[in-house]
Length: 469
Ligand SMILES: [Fe+2]
Image (cartoon, rainbow, N blue to C red; front, top):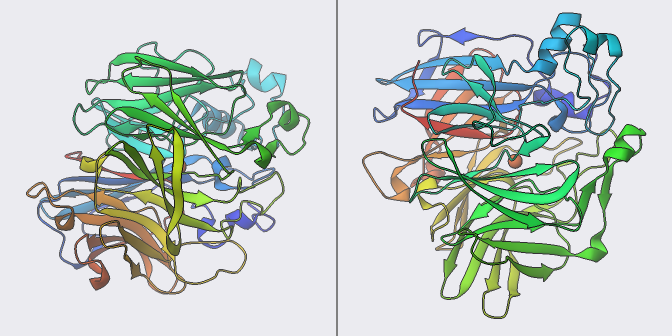
């Protein structure tokens, strides 16, 4: 592949070309792996399999999952592409067939006639990987999820027993309610402005749908739950499928419209409340909760949608910071929306036992220096909402650190007693999975699991408690 013209396929954004299985004998461990860890750390991300026609941002790459499995203090590693119909079609013809989100290509009739995936938008299955309702799934916000086996082989598309109809797109950012075990998710459609909150029980069965109709379909990536609400940011960011099909820039940013905060009752019993504020964009919430008639939202703020159709415009150099927003439920107003920390960050996560509840720590991939060209993250940040402090675990100037995942210590309810894991690639040091004590962040990793092959920068990760091979 010639990747030279694609800024987001350089350095540690470049794909790997093979699937690997590394046993514990192949994985060098520095430090001590906590014996209580039983499960798997898995991360999804873009890994193009064939020469792309256009690649603005990693949202266009084929999904590949990298997993490190823990049992009895031992570790194993696997990486696998998600075996989607689109990727199967390209493999069958041994070439790129499907275009990018920003520049779609018509699918040749002979490809469809030969059983190829007919839809021009590739189901990349590249955004998240999640265990819920007894299933392991690769998620992508433009379509159906793919069910996976524990060994990362692909079972196929999953429709939640008919909940998803053709054309439905399930979010890659559902939240699990720590009290009920419900998965709070949503579906949207390219051809409709209707947003459907979907509540799925801990048994994986669909329980309830709550509809909300926007005037116009927006780019809505994440959602947040609190005790009583599902909350989304409706930024003035839109994607025009008509423009994409004409080869024009399909991404639209209309800041004069401002950003709405849509607060939807989780019981579906009354209309949502809408809070208005100045325009901003956000990919990710950190957490949210209710307190004394207010709703507190912590999230990563960006000044506008971070890309256009042009190559290299997916620039993460654009300012992004941890913010705290406070909403007043009585007056339906935004009381404040303030920067919490001046550290550049993205991919914010928490101790998921505190999802929707008051909490102390947020964690995010972070940077402590300016980057040339394409941006990256060389640290993991810990944002302490009790003290106001931000602490960085610094992996070195050239390191690439991925989304951090909080892994609860099964023997403790304290946030301080868990661990924070992320993949780190440092050109001089190699590839490793970092394990940091959540309560002693500045001390650096307590263990590093070195993987002989590189893991490209990617998107979202999760800890799969008790999932083993
Ligand atoms: Fe995301």
